[in-house]
Image 1 (cartoon, helix red, strand yellow):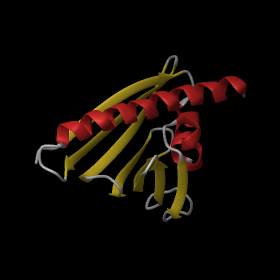
Image 2 (image 1 turned 90 degrees about the vertical axis):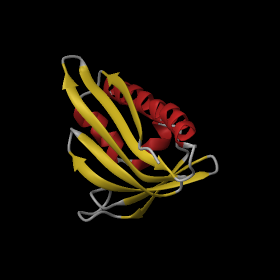
Image 3 (image 1 turned 180 degrees about the vertical axis):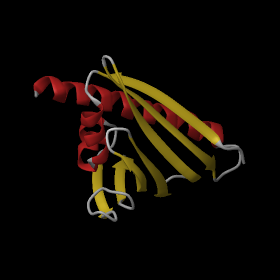
Image 4 (image 1 turned 60 degrees about the vertical axis):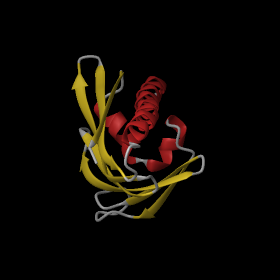
Length: 148
């Protein structure tokens, strides 16, 4: 089965530190993304939501469980799917790049469909979902920055 690739982008006037703080704080995701609930299943090696942390997010009837595999303060976050979707080898990298007017967000994912022939459908569905996450993150970070 072919590897499926997703890449979405967004921009915010907030600095990378503010965007990174929201990404790392799973409890904030229901405020800025389509995610409805968050649970820290297992703390990471350095405690809390650090590398190795397992986080569960619920959206509608879908519960996805993810493990943080990379934390680069103010630069990005990487995670892999542990369970919850009909895909294999799912990995996402959220890269933050400082610019003259704020932060550029690049959210990319790769995966393989478990069911042959469904890769394109999963890619289109996940692309819409991830774009909503990136746009919500950008907007929420900017709003919080403006209120500060």
